[in-house]
Image (cartoon, rainbow, N blue to C red):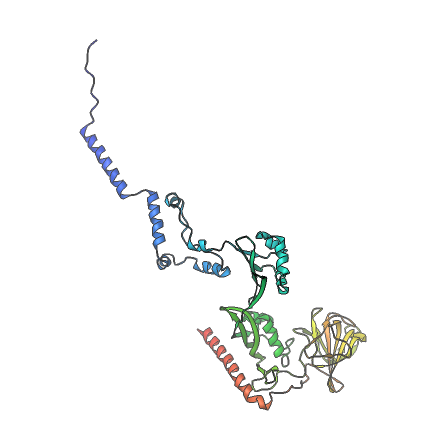
Length: 474
């Protein structure tokens, strides 16, 4: 055994030691220059929060701002949070934040429920924790409060609860113009109706007939009820069952009801113009000093004649007035003393003019028939009816345009249609060719007043059309 001294630890070459020192220095420098991903995420979030709305708009021009605006308009109680959503990294390092002022301000006693099919006031109250006795208390508080039990699907109820969870107030919008409210006070519930008064402005529509009047009105943005009103106004001069042609056009100035910039309804036609087969008819609405309203031509003649041209709206003429038509059932040559209007079963039939009902009952091959005497000279007949309108009976009176019955196939008839006859001085005449007697024009004493009102309306209609045509040429 030899006594050897212990071995010294191995010495690294000096070059290796220098390389290790360099690597350590580089790592320290990297940590100083490049922070961790968590710290970087924190900085990014802070920068976004500090940006002004204008700077955010510059960076995000396509942000869905319109959607947020629509959501706010749809529900004034909705709270919209536009802050950026926290990422997983920010959630790790960000401390808990206090609730936003908007969230803190939200009324904890407010409830909003939407009526669904089958809902009652009881089921809606139950959804917000109100007892069944609250329903009876509400409905018995006031006669008008019973309107809260007449709910419609989609209707929204706004409910406010007091600190004890009891009903403090209840209100609902029943239409664009009307809101009903029930508020609890010291003496019980008080009912209140709030009716908003709309701003009435004039609106303009222009249309060209391509297929039908109804479809053309819809394309022009004219509400359907006003399209029908226009047909009635011009119905004395234009037979909308046979006269309408492709290329005919119309212009309408009408009342539009607006609240807070939103259209909530329509009023009357103020002026209108219809060009049919190259001939133009103009109508202006006028209320005289006695309060009677009618439509007149631009020069003051009444648009209303003693008889309307067609007793059935938008029907098809299936057979015309003829002295030698072959009867489709009897198979004989027989004079056809009227005009047949084919239309779906149940289509309303209107009285062509004011008069006395000579017959409302069965009459041979005519089936269910109404005969009306108009003064001393004229008489009209309506045959093959399915049935009579309520209140129409022999010996009674009817007004022009009043529904007197409905299209059917009673009597000798091959299909649902109206057989319409027109007599003048006891002689059958062609109702399509008969020149209709006129109603009274504007009284001389009111002519100047009429012109002062009608001329600006016609001028405005002309101006609107010129502006529209100029815009279309651009």
